[in-house]
Structures are given as structure tokens and as C-alpha cells.
Image (tube, rainbow, N blue to C red; front, side, top):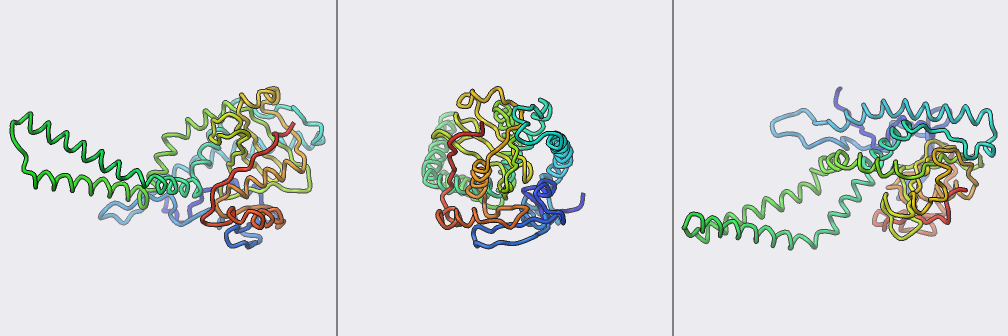
Length: 345
């Protein structure tokens, strides 16, 4: 596999599900407050060398293990996502959308495959990387504690060394060793925040994507069917969450995780305890009202990093949100989540 320059954090095959007949998308830049019409998906949701690991000293070859891994995963994901959509489209061609309520369409194996894919997608975006950087910045006040812990550990090791060998370490030498170790520690922390972020993100994906997939698998799954005049948005951060209680983690009670499949279908994952009255709807089709379509589109606007994508150039909802909640459309915004009154019946 040759080096890939333009690397997508939302894959092209997925974005094509939202394109028009010319396989182009409209997008809205909520930072610049601009509509950018009919763009090829190869130019969307990507950055140059986004996943590349830092080059090793003395080598010219870029290290792209994640890009290769994502490419192989996307080949498999596109096959089962295409199959699921064709299956649902076949059902909808035979039955009106209002008659598909509670009709089961996903097998358990398809749910397994899709859970892993959604988990990976939620962790691979620039939104997640920016969130990680913000987390780092907010923990900066803890650095004095880290320094203190390193100093305490070095003092313990020095005392043990002196006791075991019945000698006294020169004070100036001990201070030089302490200074060197602290510099190494701070250098490592700085590296992780900057050049090492692709490695940090890759490690997080491999360490936690299976765990996250298991959490999602334990939720109640619905496929929302949109037969309204509004199309589903997607974005540069398509896996979004709506907390119906105070907590907002993937496993939190009352959490609703949402992932648009195409302009007319959406995957809805409901935490099992709070939504136990929906257990009978597991893996079924559920018709959606216009209100729910707009609610789910609001989630895409609120939790996108910068760009919202649609088959249509109707971005009135995005403009409304940016006008009424300007922080949502700012580079320095607080990250907000929309609470819904209830998932679809």
C-alpha cells in the first residue's frame, strides 16, 4: 500500500450514503457560517497525514499503520452496511413506512459487526482528538503533583540505594539526576500532547474499541425510518449522544447513542435500564416523525467538530442553531449535548 496523503476520519464509503445522484454532498461550515455546495466526498472529513506516526530518525518513509488498518476495516464495513441498507430498502419497497413498526431487520451477527464499526468510528475522528487535547489542557494544573510524585520517587530510590550500598550520594549528582528525570517526564508529556497524538489516539482505539462495542451491544437497538420531507444530516463526528439524565457517557443510565446510516435511516441505541419499556423493539424498524428527524439533526450540529453534511442544501436548522447558540459554532465553544424528551415510540 503506497503512502496516503489525504486521510479520512469519516470514510468515503459512508459519506456516499448521503450524496446526490452525482455522488456529491452539500456541507455547512459552522465556524465560517458558510454553505459549501456539491463537493466530492474525497475532499470531506479528512486531513493531510492525520493518522501518521512520527517518522523515525534517519528514515524518509512515513509510518501509516492506522491508515492501512482503517482501509481493511472499511472494506468489510462497507459490505455489511450495504447489505443492511438493501435489506431495509427491500422491505420499505413492499410496505409503507407506517406499516413497518416493530418489524425486526437486524440479525445478532449484524449487530455485532455494526457495534464494532460504530465504536471505532466514534474514536477515530478529529473531534475525539480535539477532545483529548482539551482533556490534557484541563489537567495541566495536575503537573505540579506529577513533579512532586517524581521527586518523591527519586528520593525513595536514592535513600534505598544509599542504605543498600552503605554510601552517601553526592548532593550535586543527585540534583542532576533529578533534573534529568524531570526533563524527560515533561518532554514525554509534551510529546503526547503534540507529535505523539496520533499514537495516543491509535492506542486508545486498540485499548478501548472492543470495550465500547460491548457497551453498545448491551443497548436496545432501533432503526429509525425517516419518511418526512427532511433529510438526515451527518457530520465530521457522526456518532452522537443524547443524555436523558445527568450523566453523558456511553454506558450511563438514560443515554441515547445515535448514528445516521443514510438520509432516510438512522441507528438508535438506548441504554437498557432507563429505556426498558423499549425492550420489545430490539432490532426493529421504527417510523419517525418530523420532530424526531429535526432533533437528531440538531445533535449532529451540536456535536460536530466543524462540518455538517447533507444531500440537500437546506441548512436552515444549522443557521438557526448558530444564531441562537453562537457558542456551538465557535472554535472555543463549550461542548453541548441535546436532551430529547423521549426516543421514538
